[in-house]
Length: 260
Image (cartoon, rainbow, N blue to C red; front, side, top):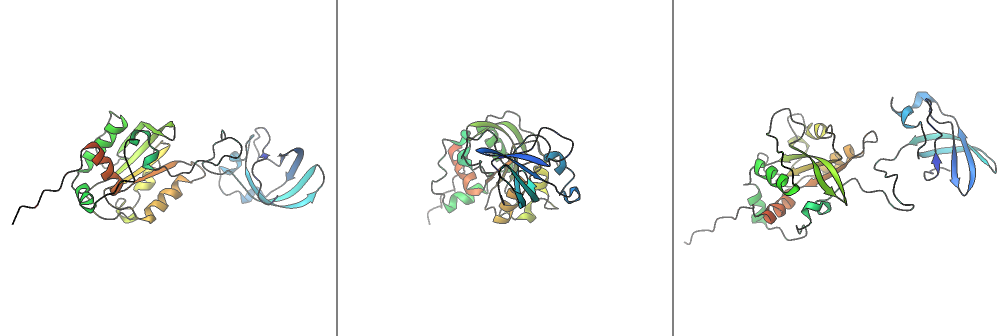
């Protein structure tokens, strides 16, 4: 009983967190226990544990009989990125979405070689050109102009990923930062990811014209797994940007060297 999730369901809606539940393990078994409300992790935790839902529980069994388990909970929570409609035994979808998961990118070979000269060519494509190219490929006709207080550069509800339509907010970083992206590159206060995740979007996308360091990917992943509002995220670095621009015929060809 130290880490069970599949069968624990809290009772019907109540103003207080559940103190008993039913374990679905073939034969009905009642699970009871108490916990100190002062140890709730946040003000929203009480509401999250009310109602009829599946929860993840870790606890110590203090009494056991044929039809009842009494325990002392150590942790009660709700797993992020859980789809209640998943068939039994199926794994939950991962939080990270890859460019190859996007329906509008289905014609692009993201495994194709990407030359160093192409990487240099990506640095010559203006950020606004990249943004409009992506919008056109996604079928998004409304492309906003950049302004200082924006939370994202492009918002669309026309992204198709993993077989369903998603809303998405995009953050584009162009040649203004022509090197590997770290957290310091994300705005004056390093808060652009924080602002991006305030958008009412299911998928948050970070695009850059160069390499994106693992520290930035880790920050995106941490925000996406926020238990209060789990989301999906996608990283598009300079190489994948170049492959998309190449597919659209927008990757500038390096000028040939004049003969000596």
